[in-house]
Amino acid sequence: MKVQMVKASPVFGRSLRDDEISEFKTTLKEGKKLAGQTGNSIFIMPSTVLPQSDMSNTGVGNFASKEGLDYIDYMKTYLDFNVVEDLPSGQIKPYHEFYCNYDASALALGDQNINPQLLTTPEYSSILTEGEYRSIIKSNNKSNKDKFINWENVAGNGSPQNTILKKAHERFKTLDENSDLKKRYNKFITENEDWLNFPREDEPDHDFFKFKQFLADEHLAIGKKKLNERGIKLCGDCPINFTTDEVNAYPDAFKKGYYTGVPGWKIPSLDYDKILDETSDAYKLFKTKVQLMAKRYDMIRFDVGWNYITPVMTPEGETEILEKNKRYLNSALVDNIDKWVKEIKGEDFDLKNLIYEVEAAPSEFAIFKENSDELIEPLKNRVKIYSSVYMHNTWGSNDAYLKKGWAPDEFVIGPGNHDHQPLRQIANGVPDTFSKNGVHKNDTISPLAKILKLKPEVLEIPVEYAKAKFAEPMTAKNNMFFFMDVFGREERFNEHDPHSSTNFRRKVPSDFKKTFQDALHEGYGFNIMDSLEKIFKARELDKTNSELYSKIVKFRDILSEKETDVANAAEDTAADDIVRLVPVEEETKNSTKWFKSHKKLLFAGGVLAAAGGVYAIYKLNHKPEIKTEPKIYA
Image 1 (spheres, rainbow, N blue to C red):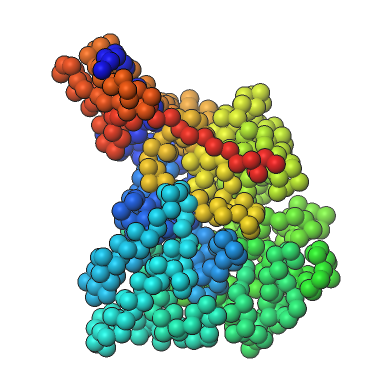
Image 2 (image 1 turned 60 degrees about the vertical axis):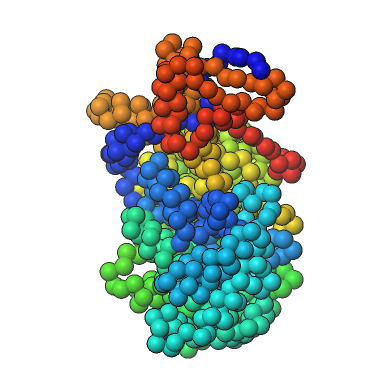
């Protein structure tokens, strides 16, 4: 046994203390208001990647789960978002191992929306036993289950979850027709029979399919209600596509032999020549799709939203978007969307809760009138979604859009979303292999430096660039942040590779608190107080609101601390009283045990416990693991 004198120096990031949280929240809200961020702050957080502990890891996360909501609560404290945006939540048919949310069904919900644990409760007549629920968890035995979604464990007829749900379905069928559960089910079936009753190739047992749709709908609603109770709206993502089953069920709604959007996507095209005719199947099907989204969500993001203004119908065999294949519908179809949503939500519904993805190449979609900087009519007074990835001196920033005369409540801006190159890669000058190997950082430094009044050479430093890119959208009324960027991740979520087994699968780990705090300390995580400090300094709000500015700086520094910084402040009184006893034969295994020699160890232990109590002292030697993916840099 060897005795060593050590310092209390764990390396994980610094969490807010309980007695700091209230002041932090107040400071954050006051700071955001002065910065101009008073509208929707959207946290793009796919429900499927929510964290799960070993005791509940079925393979996919869920907003109706306690662990998912605990995570939302924690992140809301640090980011103060009021909207959570999910990816499309429909049924997904995999391409090999690739499960893509944007290939999901437009009408039916996917199995991933079901929280089987709820079926063990009296609310669901305990139609699932605790042991059966546990068996789903046990079957998810992959070694990387904390880092990646296990779709195969949950989705599809042969999955362990579906096998267990069939047992629940058999018990459900024996319930009294007057039971509350059966009454809720029958009401759901009656209200949705128009889209429930056509055959699905991968759902041979139609009654079981309808049972799962009922559960998915209820569990999604439970998650939405829980978010609403926290002051958070749930935004659904309305995909442009339809599945083969849906095309076969409504053949007259589609233009046979044509694709819509970008031709390479090979998405079956609605018949946009007939879609404004209320008697056409295209009109009826699209209305059903939109109104299902309105029933399920508080807000709706329209994927490839530009295609509802100037839809493209490209014949099979053609590979480019040609002018002859565009249909100029102007405001007609998006006006219908407004009308259909209000039929569900009521006339008082704020149409600013409908947001449209219109980021597209000029050859695909023109947002301005010809030879003008004036927006086309359909985009006026509608909320447009943009990233700052393609920022330059007259584009891609809150400042640029306001100078074009756009109203502050007519656009959402953020560093990126699930499709874009990760902010961390951009900050490090990594070429974007899916955007002609462009280095996005180059064009953004000059405008970013002007907006935040920073020296351009400072922004050459990757960490400082990332911080500035987080700060700029905080000046906008409406902003958005993707969870991978918030956690300072360098991997792509959408790898743009249908053969990858990790594409669209990266999860928030169960030790998300530590992971987030480490990212803040490292500098690539979203330190919202650092963003506010930069804005206050640039606008000289530090002079007119000096007290608030001092609090912002205080919390900026707290969030960037490591626990070692706090512990080392007490070195002179505590460190000399701490020893570690290391069995010599175990030294190379890092199996360090801590003991106290005197009472002052209690102080050092108390400092660590105040970090949240979740990190045991033996994590002394943890260091963040940074991995790269060679193919990203190829």
